[in-house]
Amino acid sequence: MSAIIEWWPVLAALVGAGILAGILAGLLGVGGGIVIVPVLFLVFQSLDISPSSAMLIATSTSLLTIVPTSIASARAHHARGNVDLVLFRAWLPAMVAGVVLGSVTASHVNGLLLTGVFGVVAVAIALNNIFRPNAPPLRDGLPARPWQWLTAAVIGGISVMMGIGGGTLGVTAMTAFNVVAHRAVGTAALFGLVIALPGALLMLVLPDTPADAPVGTLGAVNLPGFLAIVPMTMLFAPVGVKLGSGLSGVTLKRIFSAFLLVVGGRMLWQLAGPLLDPLS
Image (cartoon, rainbow, N blue to C red; front, side):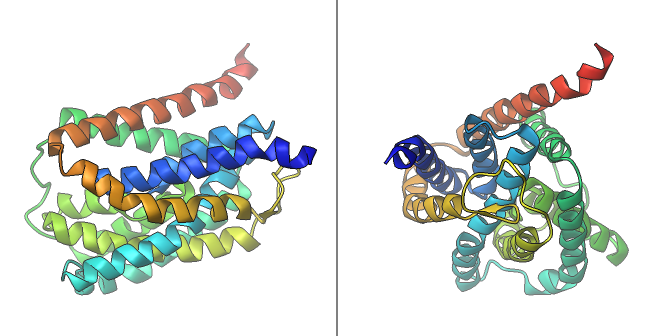
């Protein structure tokens, strides 16, 4: 009974993370990982799990939660003709290579590095949205194939280390290459599956389970977290879509940017402590 009482606040926080992720995914058109990772990071630390272990488990668990939602999203976009299959096939091998390299890296490095990667990318995206809200594409079309492959590999590697799908970085990259926004979002949904499925499977088997990991953790994936979050994201994404219909695109972008600044800034601030300790 005492174990149930101890886990009740944690379960409530995990369910809340799923609700928030689902609403924001529908509201802002972003993958749930960008929300789930920082919430799980805080929840796991509340259980006296070290920041390094908490970040590794948060990113790995987030990847598994993205698998079912990315399947549903990709099917819906494909039905509407919003998936560029030619671009998808061209980027697929390089992106998978990036995912494998990123997963191997994440399983062998200190989790604080993952915290830094997430914080830097989150803050960079927020600042780009704030200061370049209507920036024109960087190119009129796709670059040469080697540059496309490099872009795909970087998206796969960084996304899997952050525990996010293909939307956050994939849409940014494709729209910078003048891919139509709706096709960029639809194609990124399919890329999310390419990133999340192999990434989650690798994080189940590659890393040793941290000694301070919460109960139900296999490899670096917390299965209770997955089971608590996924149903909520599926249920509440339509709620976010309805809420978003009453807000302007500019307002939505500002909300998202503010959220990224807060969570990214907090992670970098927390990271600064261990980095500055040797200097003190």
